[in-house]
Amino acid sequence: MFESDFYTIEVDVEANLLRSKWHRPVSEAEMKAGGIKLYQVLRDTRVERAVANAQALGVLTPPAKEWMSTEFYELLSQTRLKRLARVLPASVFHQIALESVITRAEALGKIRFNVKSFSDPAKAIAWAKAIE
Image 1 (cartoon, rainbow, N blue to C red):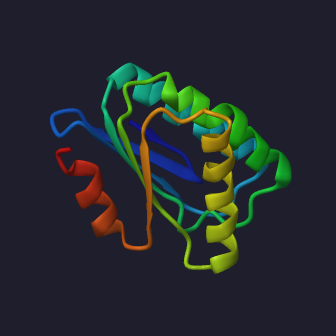
Image 2 (cartoon, rainbow, N blue to C red):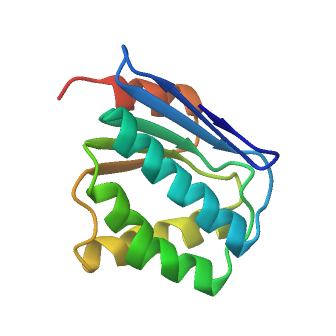
Image 3 (cartoon, rainbow, N blue to C red):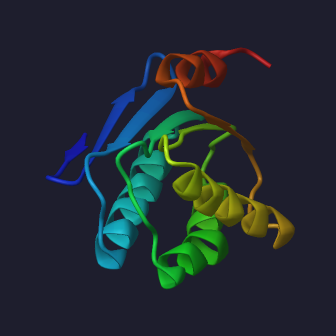
């Protein structure tokens, strides 16, 4: 569905599942480009479940974290997304940074879907596919 040197998005419409994966640490511009592409694919395919693999993402700049917490998750909330499973990096520092983004977005009322973080991609996929 979408592929670049830093990010891939694949969609299985029959399974109602989107999978995205960051391939390396990214710049703020790449983060925004990937995030907007994810929103567009979710909007256009209307899938309700997603697995976002951020294991290779690296450090996020303060402006990138701000954009994610104030704009990115609001964009995703405008789609039919119901479940987002996030696969976090092994680094505790990177995990805390990504969790702080979600915490802030939730506090701002920007998230209208279920979000859960995982260290194991297989567990993330199983949760995303699970029927509520």
